[in-house]
Image 1 (spheres, rainbow, N blue to C red):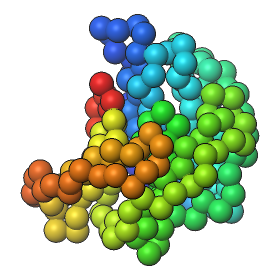
Image 2 (cartoon, rainbow, N blue to C red):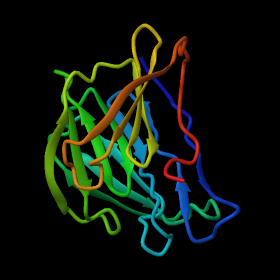
Image 3 (spheres, rainbow, N blue to C red):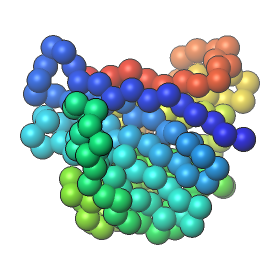
Image 4 (spheres, helix red, strand yellow):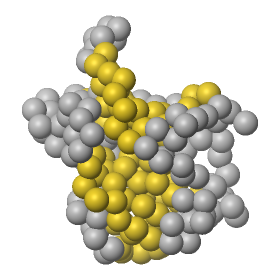
Length: 191
């Protein structure tokens, strides 16, 4: 079944020095997952307009929309930046951090050090959790991760080790119930 989560990519009107990009997972067509990388770094240092896609062959592809500011059809890529991306869910944590949830519920942490130019450079992946069985999951930026249980409870986690992949967490905390929606996403993560 196709699932589409609408994504917004916005810059803060109050600050030209910080990029506030929404991190979401999009399943655009059967077998092709796309997600936008969020960044909380100054625009000069951030990887602006980066989009990843996981193919049917479990390859991770990197794209950069160079025309994102004016909507022009200008792109860099695609570039193959990974193999073996066979996950139940994949989502961005911002600043090059990518999380993958395995079929057995393990939460894996990756940091794409080559996110700026699409080079195949990664920090060693790390297992940072287990038991991640959610109907939906998304990042709120700054290490915050929200998970929606099958019963509609909204759970809050903060990965205190999101910058280096260390196994340090605050939570979980139940922060809501009745979260039975078609699509859910965060606005302005990492602000």
